Length: 141
Image (cartoon, rainbow, N blue to C red; front, side, top):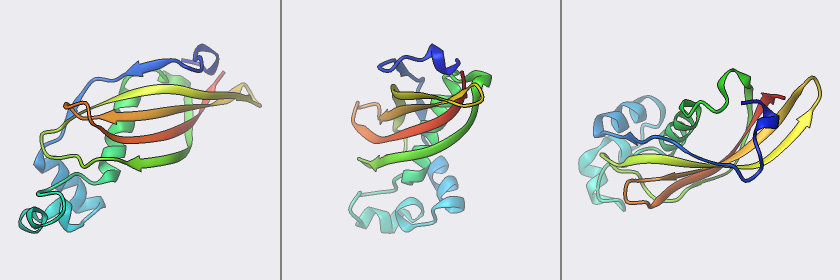
């Protein structure tokens, strides 16, 4: 969709994505090698009573689900910024995540492009909000 096809207040919902323990550990071993993501015994003794997904992993899945929703299509040029990132609740193995996306701002700029800002609200299968953040992208008008 082009910038002018989005309206402030539009709301979209993505499909779901289930995380396995193996997914969590594979991501963490490469990008966030902390004990709460990798060491089951130590994680059980910690605050979360077991392995949890990295917040960066939750953010990446949220972004992936939004992109796969297909609203940008070939009209997206590039991401420009992330704001107000909040990791609200831990994500555990076998949690199934989905994202509600709200269009919160759009601005036309030069060269037939504009900036679209959406709020990503990610929920688990218990409908607990686990993540939220704002994503801005350069989009064709």
